[in-house]
Image (cartoon, rainbow over all chains, first blue to last red):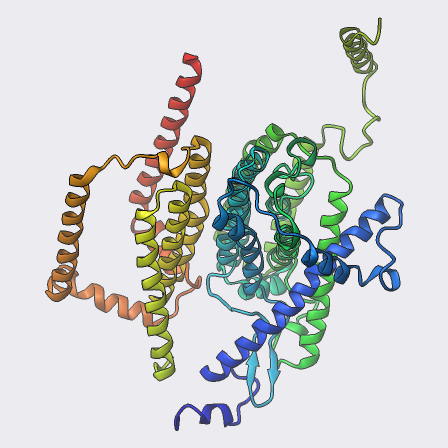
Length: 428
Length: 189
């Protein structure tokens, strides 16, 4: 005991890293605090989704429990706990009970490595990093743990002993493997610029050289689409597709076990948003100033960067919800085609282009942070964005759907619908 | 970082936790009759091994273990098991029989004896060139650019580039082979 206590009592410079014992203690506190706040945010994301959905569809949404319905989340929780837990006949009992946890835990674990503010100096403790676990493998950890989320869904589908649930589970595993590849490929471009996978290093690189979203817009686009597919939400919600598969992989679940799946989905939304911010939107960096990135660290800097970070997360969560209530669902073959034939080749071409550009600019003797380097990357990026969106658009997405349809095409479509009327006997 | 009592206690706790988990899961993996349960136990083995890699300061290896084996290969295994739908576990006969099991037991014992013998002898020290150990110690002492991936990426894309490219050609050949086999079956129908 004699040599275990003093390190807790000694006076420490708050600008220096913590001692080992303090590190263990502070880590435990960080885990507890971040877990609590994170779960609260997940719960309120469900509420936000319902209110935004109602707003988009021009109705009221849940507004009865408390002012503007803010206690709806608590009411939902109580309701879910009070419901009966069912176990379908012939289900594999252990795996059926394990599956919701398998879906939920990876979604939450991923958040552990994401930095959310500048380091906080606490007098007598030392410099506390504002990240739960500052792992040197950085975003590789999030990709690795994120790839485990598929187990929960697949096992849920299989153990339910229900053919619709099994189909949902199979779709989920195929979909998540396909989109993980495109997601991993898009992060390679970030790696080429940052030269490290450590998330705080990537954020610092963006703080000094400009956000990656401006220099690597295509990588961000691919990452965002893949992240949307990984969360299994509309337009990629094929695993649950209620009009085809009843409710897909969670058709047999009830009560709190069912509730774990939506919780995992919303946790995934927050995690994907945080990862996009860390990789492409400068993490907790305040743009156009270096004041927030340099020591000495102060509590003001921590609070300001955290505030901006929360704002960015709310923006992305809102975008996820906005997309869900705007877009229709893909067909299964379209989903696979987008993953393998569009996103993956696009990512490979883009990696080659970015790697060549970085190699060429380095060979030309331009420093990484210089205006010439950034200007050249930005120029290449603009060319890519214009090209890709011109190809993807084909006169339909950016311009209104009705604007460029030729007269012959309309006549042809009318002819087809007239013939299908004849076939079904309606036109006779 | 100076090792102290706190470190060594945490280290041995983590070592026994991951080691025993890996062994127990491996035993469960070979004894379960349900293919899905066996696959899930194998996932657990991979995870425990990843934990052991982290303890050896091989964070990149640990991440790749989880990302490639647990997150991709085992998911495909599960996918295939579910598609084949092997029926109820009790209907799947154990094709190996009594003699096969006894034979397997002897092979396992022989390999265990070999590992123990290697551990006691100084053969490994003699096989590894003396300067390699010095190099490893030197590399461990000096922090390299590129964090944990730099020290792996630099030899892979400089010294061993040919081997790396040949491996990728091998994988490409395997993919093309799989596509050819898949196509032939649909044409025959």
